[in-house]
Length: 467
Image 1 (cartoon, rainbow, N blue to C red):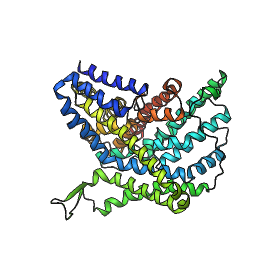
Image 2: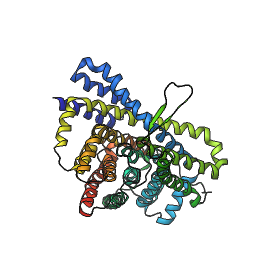
Image 3: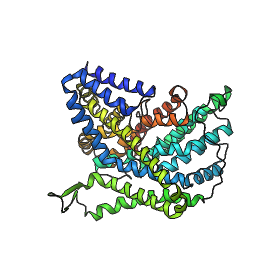
Image 4: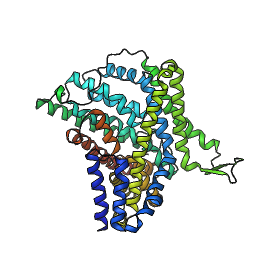
């Protein structure tokens, strides 16, 4: 019965998302429904003391990354840098290779620090235009953008500033560059398998006579992209490079500044007690935040006149996007936190403990919770908050470096997270004007590829010892 209650709440949340309802509204309602069916008297306390506490904790730690990432992405867009990057990639790859071109563009943006949510808005107009010209079915656009934004650049490539690669550092004392060889291997497998699948789908649809789509059936079609590019592509790429190198530099510098201390404290005259921060938990976050600030400054240096004219409007849009993305993830984290406190979760947790191999146990646990919450970062945070000590102890006993634990956890979070109620999937479909019924099948195929790749990486580690 306890497991059935948790499963009911999850299924209803997935159905609500499938029907287009707001996760911010439905997650707390369905979490409290699960509590009510377990213990009606516990609902008020569970809401205020558990659900909202989890939401606040998540936002306290990670909202600055969402905010700076959204602002950076918006400035990349309004400065004309994103258009220059897209045009250069299309010129290099060729207009006829729309699927790999859009994957490369999206990957460049997200690996360079642009939020996944922002990248969708930035890339979609160019993806639609390229797919229209090549007569590729529009319903492959979400999966193509997703391959570049929601898979290897989100959590596999070492150094990616996306939140899914930052969270494990808080628990394992690692950095965003953990297990670089395994991360690169996983990225290559995902990109190759994803491109092979999407190209196979393109050929199958073409053989069936399906093209881009009849104009009267299309929704949210963007304006034609005819404006001239005025920014050199190397200049446009510079802010992305600054974010990547800045992240690496700060990752190395911050521990030296703090003298290797686990905590740092400051005394402010207006406070009776010192303010303390855990360096091991915050260092990776500080590095990413500092790198994004460097990227923003670089854009302002090279495109200040253009950005200044639209900064007020653009910054408001960025803040709105960050709030929406952050709250979507935070409430899913809160939902998962409530489910994790119910008796049904203990049954699932005990069942997961039966998996003897530390890395496989970690991968299955993280991807399961990511699927339950519909959020890679939410599921990852919940899994590590509840079981990081257990993973570390098992890993240390087996001689597994914590960098490997970091990479496996990060990649597993981007496995089964992209079920229908995932916030990024909902945003992706809404922006492209498509429904779950039209386009989710191909997104789910990438979900399966991504999930299986985690176990490929685990196998590579055990066979070769590469980190």
